[in-house]
Image 1 (tube, rainbow, N blue to C red):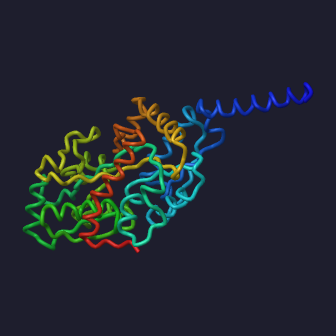
Image 2 (image 1 turned 90 degrees about the horizontal axis):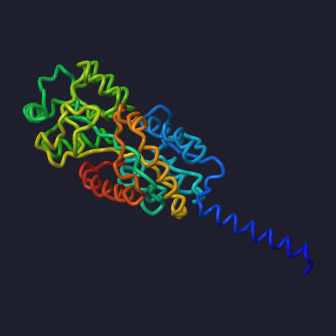
Length: 326
């Protein structure tokens, strides 16, 4: 072997060593990451995912947002489950595609635990038991008494069959033994509009900036939130637990999930970049003002546990009401 061959071999070995070292030092990503939002643009998932994608440009790399709506989030989730496990395709998943759909549909093209690597839960969206101001109730106990006295006469609106609005109201009915008629809408917007207009008397609404403003201006009345603790954005609203319903907990999570078998080092890197972003108070406030509270533990293990617990929480409720999404 001559000196040129030895030099070429040495350079090749050095290049391989550099590549391994670069990967070990977290040089991922070297091209844009695709964040799949499994719903059309303009909803709560966009409100959570797009600020995260923008923030990652300075902490991780370019993130391109791609909305793939359909089948209640299942189409986008399935696309990510089938993607290469290389860290360049990430799902912005939540309670619909990862909890409700797998339980309520007879066939879902993915398993929420086996086909994804949990990265981080970003935010938790709480719901509020909300009524039109004309309804003669000012707290949750009064609503329960009113519903029992008017069995079958009171109705509630939801964003559609199988949504967390729907399931939360059904959980409320189950815990209180009340008979309240479900009026499904095609999305939360029309339901909230009809509540404000007085066409329906009640809704279990996602707590958003819009709902908070409508409550503060007296156009609707939030009676209680369904989180374990009071919300930072509306601390004056009591929890349903405080009102005497200890099992009335309903929160929709939104988080990051990669295809199964994505290297743990990549999962940890994305998770760490996310935690770094949320350490900034200004970035946190962006979500809090919109009613989306950052989840306190954004580690991969905590994210997986959260999904497991939500599957266990909602399975009996979904089966009890006979919800079928096929």
